[in-house]
Image 1 (cartoon, rainbow, N blue to C red):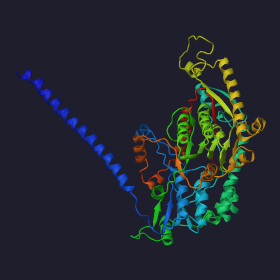
Image 2 (image 1 turned 120 degrees about the vertical axis):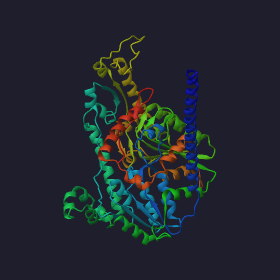
Image 3 (image 1 turned 45 degrees about the horizontal axis):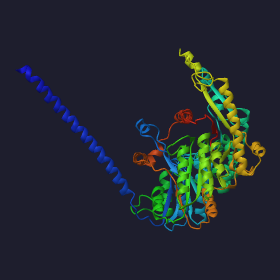
Image 4 (image 1 turned 60 degrees about the vertical axis):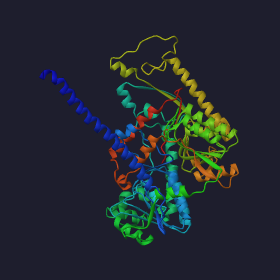
Length: 610
């Protein structure tokens, strides 16, 4: 009898354990659901309109990178603990400063730059122009940093007064471009990169085919970097004349100047006129408190942060019926549908089509911040812009930090092309690059054999050496693509093909140089491009509407979760030099995974915005 009872006892025990586990599972899911709801409710509660303080300072303390469009991280990368890239929209910063210039509630602007991780020179110049407008309105601007790198100092230099921590420094080093060259690694692995290109200066392929910088790339890079460095110095000199006079010696004779300051880097910056004084963080807070007034509890100064102020701007703004649609093309150009931060050919084309079919949108501004990529995707975007012009809607291109190669190709369907003086553009050239993995496969004892119906069958298989006939086809295709590129530019810019070829060949230019050579129409930022679009559309009152792909509920939740961190903590969590270097190499190699052009043809520039 006891033996027969045991199965029932076991079943009851298992059933009881399962019931406990199931209850815990349901409880966990309920707790997670409650936590998400609580988070969303808290976010809604925190975002409710609240009165802005009177006679307050607007605090601009960007943490992370200044971008035209925020990228969306995948859930997998979040779970894997990948590096969180905090991003700040350039348009939020510029709009806030411009609005604050005429806002009676804002009496001063405070710039705190320690968290700023990166920004192209053109983006800094757009912010600088807004700061100048703020100062012209008779309001003061104050800047502080525990230290300043080159990017941070450009932003801070526009202030009436600039202070640095007594233990800080102002590090200016000029601009440089030092690619990582992978040929030695590929040689060791037995990998061969088969390259087809047109353009003497088309250097994108060189890191994978050389171990050093070619003479042509060195020449082209020097031209635009020297021009960018001169522009940087001119910006500083215009904002701070004393600093401008000493800037060349500050960089070239840094050891001597530091010795004269007794090894005190902060004092060296002060002596050169780069900063107005040295203050610890608490002294800085007390100083600003004396300028704009203390909070009710006396612990801080009256201020409003960027996020709060921008939210109120968007809520309070009038919305006329007529719109200028702004479409952002930021990142590598890739075929198909892609998330924000990558220029998906089909995605951006769909947004252009959406703007064209929207009767309220009277003109389109394409904001380009891209080094190029897929030739197929670039043409899909260009064609959609061309159709928009044919439909009677003006199309203006506004170039951001980079609008080169494929980024320049898509700009050729515009009525007007605007560039910042320090935009990186041009790079009119084309290439194809295919890996030959037969070497490492042989070393691993792997063999590939078979039969095809034609000599071209399996001709693009990376496991096999590239067939000569396929190579011939690719080279002819590349040469035809280059001729087409020249023709598009010539038609758009009203130049002969020969004249375009003289400034093409893959050569990179700054916006100011491109203007001289006829590659762009006007020099100016996004605001200038919007005004030009309004003039062409005959608009006096209009709303600027960003035409963007709606985020899924999942991506919206991720964006809120990842953008909810404490900015002071984010500013302190800076990677080491070794981590930054490894991350750069990883990013360069991972970028190859985006190469999905159906014809393996690319319009891409190996050019970094200074």
